Length: 211
Ligand SMILES: C[S@@+](CC[C@H](N)C(=O)[O-])C[C@H]1O[C@@H](n2cnc3c(N)ncnc32)[C@H](O)[C@@H]1O
Image (tube, protein in one colour):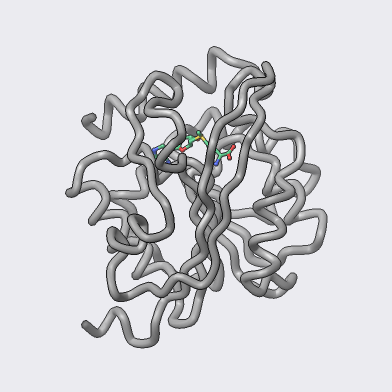
C-alpha cells in the first residue's frame, strides 16, 4: 500500500468512526501498562507510542506523571481525538508521520506499538520500521510490540496484516534486538468478538547503530 493511500485510509477511519466504534478500542490499556512497567517504566523514562492513534495509553501515562512522552501516528485526526481528552495535552509531543519514513531527533527509553507494525506487510516497510526503531531506541532501551498472533485475524480495519509470534518477530527485528518477554493476549472488541494478539518485549543491544 502506498504511503499516501495508507494515510488516507487511517484519516478516513478516524474521521468517520467514534472512538469506541473501532475494533481495537480498549477503555483502559491495562496490558500495555503492565508490559511497560515490566520493561522498566518510571515517570522519568522517555516513552514513544508508535501508531498510538486515539489510544488511551497517553491518558494513563500523563496521569501517572510521565515526563517525556511522544505519540506518533499517521492520522492527525486520531491524535486530535486523544489531545481533546487531555487537560495537559501540551506536555505530550504529537507527531503526525508514517513511522517507516520518520527520522527521530532523539532517543527513547521505551517504544510501545500496539497493532501498528502488523500493518506493514512488505519486507521493505518492515525493514524501514526496524531501522527507525534502532535509531529511536537507546542502547538497552526496550520495545513492547503487540501484533495479531499466528492464529489471529488476517485483516484489521479492512487491511491485510502480518501475524507474529515472538520468534518470527525476532527474526524480522534481527540481531540488534533480544527478546526479553512475550505473552499471548485476547482482546475483546467493543462488539464482543475476540482477537488473538501476541505481545513481545525486545531490548536493543548495545552499539547496534554502529553496525
Ligand atoms: C489498529 S490501530 C491501533 C491504535 C492504537 N495503537 C491503539 O492501540 O488503540 C493502528 C494504528 O496505527 C496507525 N498506523 C498504521 N500504519 C502506520 C504507519 N505506517 N505509521 C504510523 N502509524 C501507522 C494507524 O493510524 C492507527 O492509529
